[in-house]
Image 1 (tube, one colour):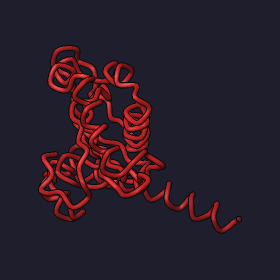
Image 2 (cartoon, helix red, strand yellow):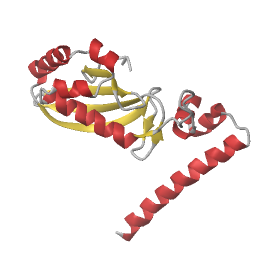
Image 3 (cartoon, rainbow, N blue to C red):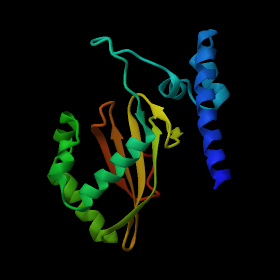
Image 4 (spheres, helix red, strand yellow):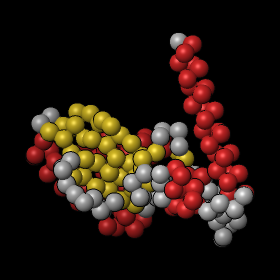
Length: 186
């Protein structure tokens, strides 16, 4: 057990060191493109993960959300859908998204899934990613729209579920497709 504790501390230390190293690189005038290139990600992904932004209207810092929050929201959304609780799901949605995806359309779509593969049994491989596809570790934080993805394991097959959420963790996109469907719209 001591090795596990030590390894976890090393991970936390590395995350802290990475954050400090990125801040130092920015202080030295390095661009987000340079930082992203070194890290194997886009400049936008590097900025969303390590940068800071201020809301021009309020002067408040733009809040980052954790990948863990997106993971939890994604599974919660599909739990509500599978339970037929589209009204509760509507409470989690951005007002414009509510108009575009009314409860009746979500229920009708889920009925189609049920007809194809039966009831939801579990969710697997749930993850959070940025809009450019960069997968986040559960401890990572990011600004902007985040996407949650999970495999919906049903009685007779699987579907892919995706949820897009804004800065306030309101659902702004919802997708239920076969795993081989592509390209994904978000």
